Length: 163
Length: 163
DNA sequence: AATTCAAACCATTTTATACCACTAATTTAA
DNA sequence: TTAAATTAGTGGTATAAAATGGTTTGAATT
Picture 1 (cartoon, each protein chain N blue to C red):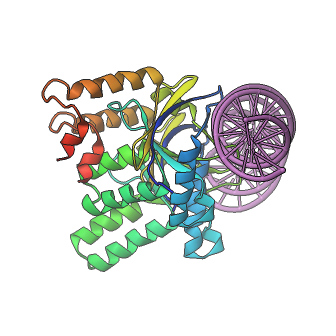
Picture 2: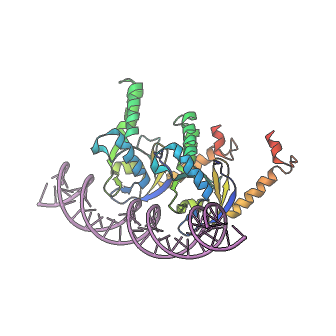
Picture 3: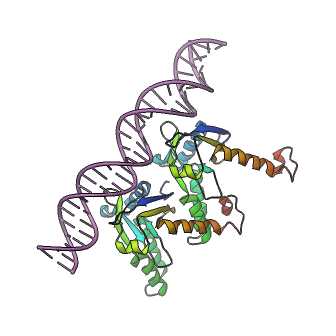
């Protein structure tokens, strides 16, 4: 089984804020969460909505959420500005949601508003996490990404960047 | 594990000073307190209002309150200025409140006054603790935080801070 | 005895969760 | 390769829980 979030897809969100989680993402989340323990948390995922520099939602299993938390704690002493900033970004500006029996999650209103989500939501796998986007914002971001390396370097194949 | 205070929300406070504690925070508090023992203390939480450098309330379960207390005792000998300062900050300028059968806490008048709390209270999860804020003060602080790293470093994603 | 404040109780609104049903797509097995 | 079975995605409804407002009781204070 691949523990890599892959691919892009669009799902419906209803008025109550319910969205189906792509089935393969769901499997990865459950499988990852199993490593952490606690049966109760088994179908939990963490969603970071962050501050105004980000217009999408960043989603990950408890394993990665915990890794980030531990990183923050060990690298930045309590009371320092960076610590406060990071705690705020990754903990205050985030939520934990449950996967319901139908494989959906329920996004609270303030999160939907923050990410400008309407009746359609784009999912994008990003390896160890996945993202949720407003479809327009998403294709906009895609264009930006494509343009980003078009001019300076002529890249026939992005693999060259890995050299 | 899910014992991390997360997210932000706003709750009403009535004239008597009663505020609902976000349900997930409540669960974490109870779960944490269970580690300490004493059935009586099961639904107690500690609120530090501190001195004038802080305009919010810092709230945590008995486990953390105890940990802080032990830390102070072991690191600063009785009679030293630092010891006096810390005792004053974390013990004198704090209260222990109960969670009532409806999931609310009752804030005494002097604490409400100190934190400038009116009919709306902002809750902000901070990992091992959570905070309560006057909504205006809160959004003001948020702006400050966001500005804090905008100019000096170009951060497309705060994760780079973790490298 | 009157006043104040905390605690308990009760009721309503809102929101989240569970439950059920349908369709489409995919997989499995005959 | 088709029919049956399963899984995915979606919508609606019923139920439970959370948030909050109000009233009453009880203890402590003046």
